[in-house]
Length: 263
Ligand code: KIV
Image (tube, rainbow, N blue to C red; front, side, top):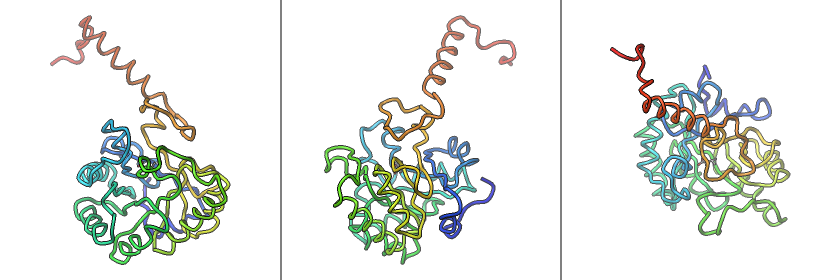
């Protein structure tokens, strides 16, 4: 990406181009993905694919700040979103204190928080205090324990109405865009039509304003499980394992280092 997107250019993209968002957790990968992504999300999914935990719940603010800094170093011309982790936005004051820490200690362009109508006052408070917010509705990974698993949303009329109300509440509160996760495609389409800010889908079908994928999923590096919505664009795990095996074999046989690698 040559020119860094801004809040207004992202909003203006709705209906004009499909936005590309991808996660990254470090400078190495943020530099690589920045060439094709409009926005880089430092998702709390890093707690799973990077830190090896079984869910995102134990991600900390310090962790998010550390990784966001690394991402910003690797991709200084990219629009970077920092996920606010579980427990850091349970009320307006705590949310603002923690979002200020993110803004002061990193170059993040905005924060992302999970929730709809229930988080509207928090989104409004952050927005009113100069913190741009990306919403996150539908399936909420930070609710995995309270909900007893990852459950696709929008399957009932009640859920459909609630998700559309969430989207409208998030927009009205001042968010400039939102992610919709794990939601029936027809409901996600309705959501995208119901609001005037971009709706970025993950497991929410094609009829939204852009897509986001976790880089370690789409590059086939994360092997623990593969959700239905993930397309693997690379068999990264096999490539890495084969390369390391080749290296190990060459060390064993002393084929490495060769003359050209030797001072
Ligand atoms: O943490 C994350 O990577 C996310 C995406 C799944 C949207 O929130």
